[in-house]
Image 1 (spheres, rainbow, N blue to C red):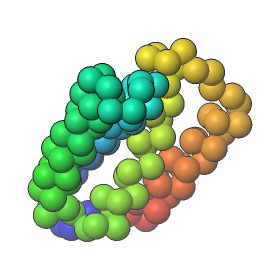
Image 2: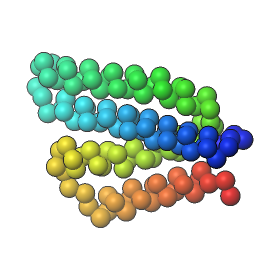
Image 3: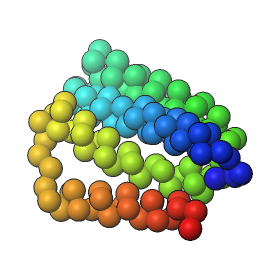
Image 4: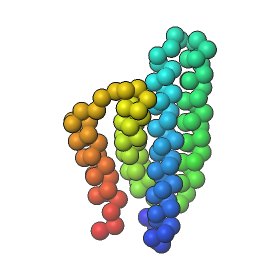
Length: 118
């Protein structure tokens, strides 16, 4: 990250993770919409909420990439896998396999390696 203090780096990382949580919420609304009849009231409601969440994400994403390199910001998007997996278990009672966990950990560790300063 561009010549930032450790405190500022931590703040930006936390902002990025909060942003990734917001982005992952769109997956919840997409899943909820997919279980409804096409163009029913709940389909339109959940689909509309998905669009709103993606709009908020897009605006906040613009603000974050002003502060750090795009490559660093984009690499942090891999954490969406973690949040999406957590939401799948909590909200939809889906199961997570060892393969799912191993793949997620591999992607996140790769992100950490790419983003490390050393």
